[in-house]
Image (cartoon, rainbow, N blue to C red; front, side, top):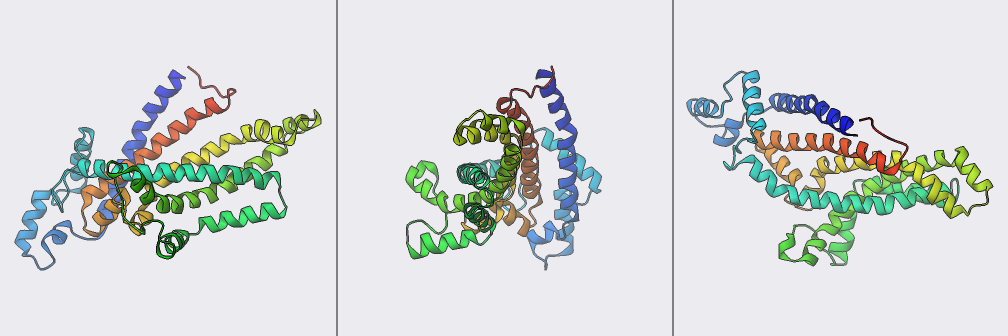
Amino acid sequence: MTRFLVGRLLAMIPVVLGVTLAVFGLIQLTPGDPAAAILGTQANPAALAALRRAMGLDLPAPIQYLHWLDNVLHGNLGVSYRNHMAVAHLLASALPVTLELTLVSLIIAAVIGIPSGVIAAARRYTNTDYAVSAAALFGISIWLGLLLILLFSLVLGWLPASGFTPLHDGLWANIKSMILPGFSVGIFSAGVLSRFVRAAMMEAFEEDYVRTARAKGLGERIVIYRHALKNALIPTVTVLGLQLAFLLGGVVIIEQVFALPGIGQLTLNAIEARDYPIVQGATLLIGVAFVIVNLVVDLAYTAIDPRIRYGG
């Protein structure tokens, strides 16, 4: 295990470097001039040139990348063009909101997606299976968040339509501000997870160990949950890990719809303002999160299936 972990950590180095290169390259291809965004399109050309020099934008792209990478390796993600605050500080302020939304959404996805997938597989090709599959497809619909706002906020008035209440301002108020966005994202992921769980369970039902368990006269509940589900958890954990990484990077729309001051909203606002240091820092953070989640998923396999052992 130690040798595997060290090997994976070393393998992450070129991957993360590739992420930094891809992030910087995409930013370079993005149209727009940060200096013009700051001073305005009617600014004096001399002032624009002076600002570009001050921001290092007049240097060749490879030199800019090396300067940025050197700063990143020293923990410096740069300074925002717009408000002159450290990017690391801005990301640290927005990250708790995104992490809370991600955690709530992931819990909702697992609580709904896994049982519904198991039920659909256990009652495959019945009306229950078709109903669960239809509900999963509806959950994938991006319009669900708007429907939830319409029902629970505008019609019933139970929950706030937008905004975020920090935890230190009240637990219940914080929970209320997270229920609608959490369900909007969580139901989407639950729909995806349910379909994968159903497919994994149906494959497990065809294995010999399930037939043997049934031949021994074991109850159907024991066959489903102790034998089939346990062996279907490997692909399920893989999908759940991918959903976690997706949630960290894919909540931009939800954070905008519900006015949550998280990484997604911060990044989108930075893109509109051509605030490239924030965009680079946020994208790099999400890319590294993907790499770390993949490592955690691999390590989780050993806890789920004792037959899986990594050398060392």
